[in-house]
Image (cartoon, rainbow, N blue to C red; front, side, top):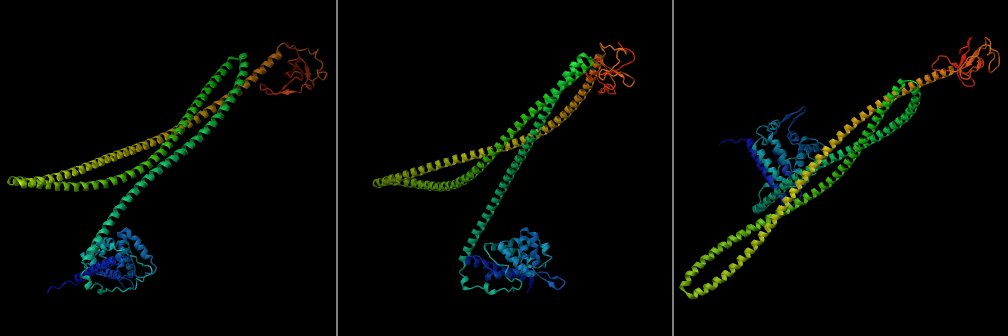
Length: 606
C-alpha cells in the first residue's frame, strides 16, 4: 500500500469543502431571491471555509511576546499588488471595534465579497508566489494548484449581492467551525438537476449583462475624455481672447497717452514758433542795417526751423498712420470675436447633428438586420417553391404517359393540371410582387445609406474648415503680436525724436539769448554814435552855473554834459544811474531826456 501525502489529502479536502460551500451558497442565494445579510448561515460557513483555506500551510512568525500565525499578513500584501484594494485596507484599519489581526482579515474578506472583487484580489496574490513564500510553506494550499482552482470558483460569487454590517459585529472572538450537516445530501436534492440548469442559464445571462455594462462604461469614459478635451480647447480659446482684449485696451490707453503728449508738444512748438518768429522779425530789422554775419546766422536758424517743422510733420504723419493701424487692429479683433462666436454656434449645431446621425445610423442598422432576415426567409421560400415545381414537372410527365392509356383519365388529369397551373401562377405572381416590394425597400435603404455617407462627408469637410479657421486665427494672433512689437519700436523712435526736438529747442533758446545780447550791444553803439553826432561842447567860460540847481561849478560840483539835449548838470543833480552791459560801471543819465551824461573836460571838443 502506497502512503499518501497528508498535506495533499488536506488540500483535496479543503478544495472539496470550498466547492460545496460555494455551490450551496450560490444555489441558496438564487432561491432566496434577495440580498444576503451577515446572519445568513451558508454565508457564514463560506467565510469559515475560506479562513481554513487561507490558514493552510501558514508559517509561524516569532514576535517579542509569543508566536504569531494570522492570515492578515498575506491579505495586507494585496494593497501593494492591486491599487484598488487600498480603500478596503484603509477602511479595515479605521474600524474601531477590531483589535486582532484575525478580526481585520475577516472584515477584509467581507468587504471584498461586497465589492465582488475577492477573486481578483486573490488571483493577484497567487501570481506573486515569491512574496507568498514568506508567509506560507511550500506545500500550502495557496502555493499549489488547488489555490488557483478556488480562485476560479470564487468568480461565480459575483452573482450574489451581499449587504453585510462589519462595523458593529464582533469579528475577533468568532469560532471558525465547519458545519458539515449543511452539505449532506437529502431526498429533496435528487430532483434538483432542472433547477441547476436554470441557475446556470441565469448565471450566463447575468455574466452577459455584466460584460455589456463594462463595454458601455468603456465607451462612456472615452466620450467623457473627448468632451473634456473639447472643453479644454474652448477654455484655451477663451483665455486667448481675454488676453487679446487686454492687449487692445492697453494699446488704446497708450494711444490716448501718445495723442495727449502729441497735442502738448504741438502746443509748445507753436508757442515757441510764435515767440521765435517775433524775435526773428525784430532781429531781421536790426541785422539789415548792421552786418552780413547776422544774416547768415538768421538763415541758418531759419533752415533749422524748416527742418524741425518738416520733422514735426513727419511725426504727425507717423502718428496718423499708427492711429489708422490701431483702428484696423480693433476692427480685426471685433471680426475675430464674431467669427469665434459663430464657430462656437456651429460647433454646437454640429454636435447635435452628429447625435442625430448616430441615432439614424442605429435605426438604419436595425432596419438592415430586419431586411436581411426577411430576405433569408424569402430565399428559403423560393427554394421550397422550386422544389415543388420540380415535383410538379415529374408528376406532369407521369400524367402524360397515363393519358395515352385512357382518355377519361386524361380529361380528369387535364382538369387537375389546369387547376394546379392556376394555383402555381397565382403563387408565382404573389412571390414576384413581394420580391419587387423587397427590391424597392432595398433601393430605399441604399439611398438612405448614400445620404448618410454624404452627411458624414459634409461633416468631415466642416470639421476641416473649422481646423483651418483655427489655424488662421492663430496666425492672426501672431500678426497682432508682431504689430505690437512694431508699435513698441515706433514708441522708442518717438522718444528719440522727442529728445532731438528738446535738444533743438534748447539750441534755439541759446541762439535767442545770444541774439538779444548782440541786439543790446548794437543799440548801445547806436546811442553813442547819435550822441556824438552834431553836438558842440560849450566853453568853460560860458558854462558857469548848473541847469537845475543854478549853482556855480566848483571842484566838488563837477560839470556833466548831456549828449542828446546839450544841457550841463552838476554831479549832485545828475544822480540817476543806469547799468549797461557794455560798461562795467553804471552810467549817469539826463533827467529830462534820459541820455548818457559825459563829464566835462577842461578843453572844448568840437
